[in-house]
Length: 568
Ligand SMILES: Nc1ncnc2c1ncn2[C@@H]1O[C@H](COP(=O)(O)OP(=O)(O)OC[C@H]2O[C@@H]([n+]3cccc(C(=O)O)c3)[C@H](O)[C@@H]2O)[C@@H](O)[C@H]1O
Ligand SMILES: Nc1ncnc2c1ncn2[C@@H]1O[C@H](COP(=O)(O)OP(=O)(O)OP(=O)(O)O)[C@@H](O)[C@H]1O
Ligand SMILES: NC(=O)CC[C@H](N)C(=O)O
Image 1: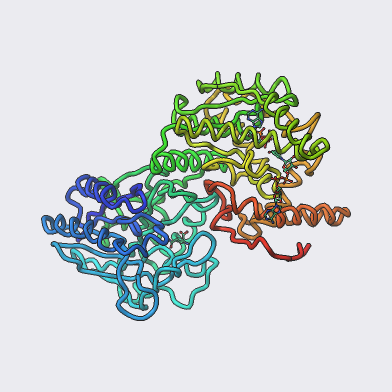
Image 2 (image 1 turned 180 degrees about the vertical axis):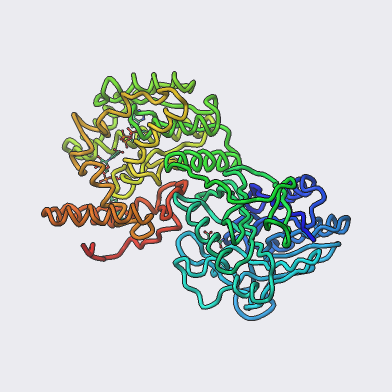
């Protein structure tokens, strides 16, 4: 007795029903003679369709895909597992997040997700009604399979639910648990999933299959990383990270091992140990590539200051889209250092990126004169600083408009946290690819970028220069902010809190406690005050590719017109 299984880890475009159907059909072709073919959560629409599920024709359009798949399933014996939105006939929200098994032209099993995540970036309770606590089971080739959907298996992982759907299917005799997922990646998530699901397999003494999706949808990115686990070895088979793939294996309940591949029993698989910087690299490249492709951009434009934020943004964009699809613009002013243009020239030459020059000194002088005339006095220093950032922002938007390029904004998480950026100036843009990296991580990723390419593509002169906005004479970031290693620890503790990985959390907590013991409580309070006061800027900022558990955007929803003490 055995089951031939295909796991389909695919990259879906939200609500591109025809495109998603084509992807699924190609995977079915590839799966060949499998008995069970498993796709991921909400694969017909992609995850997460948000309020598009409320559109009057959403279900009809999804039904057309379902009908096509049912017709196809009539031509084979295989059981096809998909995720779809279904109508709730009972009370409560009008829809369910469901798993369907299609076989011989019919829906032979319909199961509604019981545990709906409604925290951080997830808001499923906004649209869906949880399903009843009934186990979803299918007997196939003499094997009893139990099904769950993503969060259903995350009981006791921080969210304590009153029910445990995995326990439900195990108690009903499941010999194999199949979980379909839409599990976005962030740093630390791979290890978290490994520990959780190896633990489930061991605790319930049941083998399981975990099928995730891959690719970027707006802010979130899925790393795929689907796997098979057994009670004895933990994870025994891993699908590649950040790749669309169809993988086949065999489930053998009475075999030497629960799973086999190409006739070989599967035992413990090596962990996917990605250093943090490599994870950031791959997540950001995937996120930008998919954002551009799915929205319909080929090329991007970036203001290149000769500083590290824009340098890293240019470099990552070149890898994601091809150097020929990146346009950098240097816009020197009277305050720009000699390195500002020179370092941009070296950077772009190294990467093969086109660099244009559009000086701003004359424009700043012209504007300044008219304001001086109208104000009856010279504009304040801050006004002139921001004027430069806004002139640059306008120039970049003009290039974006005229050539149809996507403008990438270059703020990092440290600056965005404290509002160290000019609204309608350097915050201009359609997407921010480094906005979930603290400045210290921007440095680390820049060094890693060079190491991974085996060449100093990002010039060391850029990596080693002292950060400066260069908006006035001799300006340094440390004039207004503490050094980044200090700032970042305070910010991590305040913004991410215990969502940090344990070691990072302990480090930040001890660091901030030591600052306070050293009489620097006032500094901590000032930083937290800046974070609170700059919420209005973040509300207007472009979407950020999420790499950490708690990114700005959906994952951190804060009011603006509030008064809440720092609590420090
Ligand atoms: N709660 C609120 N809701 C809505 N609007 C609010 C507001 N609070 C202030 N505002 C408005 O916001 C505006 C002030 O914000 P904004 O114009 O951005 O200006 P502001 O935040 O005052 O200044 C920008 C700061 O960022 C620094 N900077 C700029 C550019 C690049 C970099 C860098 O290194 O990357 C650093 C610059 O040196 C300066 O310290 C005003 O119009 C004010 O009325
Ligand atoms: N001289 C310039 N030429 C082109 N773009 C610039 C210039 N100065 C600033 N910018 C744009 O504005 C953004 C903010 O730059 P700024 O130098 O003020 O701060 P930063 O956060 O230190 O960024 P960076 O590390 O890229 O310099 C830059 O990343 C860049 O996109
Ligand atoms: N789609 C879901 O239910 C996702 C929630 C789950 N805890 C995860 O991130 O993997």
